[in-house]
Length: 101
Image 1 (tube, rainbow, N blue to C red):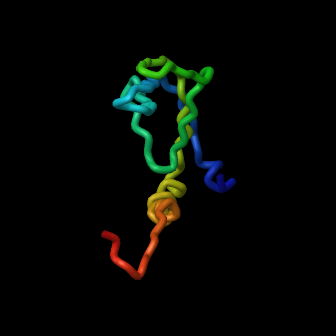
Image 2: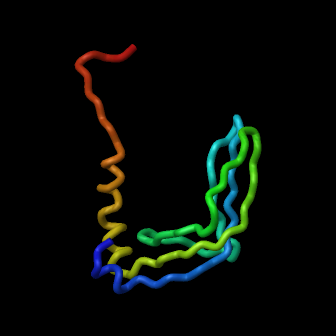
Image 3: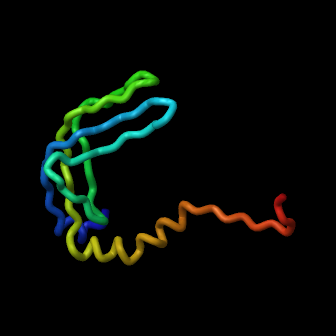
């Protein structure tokens, strides 16, 4: 994190629900803020509590606290301006001379 951006950040702690699925149909984790808080570009979220593992074939919900570190206006503008470039780093392109059948 850039030290200039760090000066303009503020933190807030909110209640949240972590929904974890470990089934054949779905594998994933979702975080829902209980009071409808919205996270914007540049914001960081830290969920507190012990790590969890659930057995295969089950889904569980956990109540936790989360700390949201809000980005300042300058950092948010920078993230919006350069975010697409960062996303392109995740893409891998391959070109071949022959057509695939």
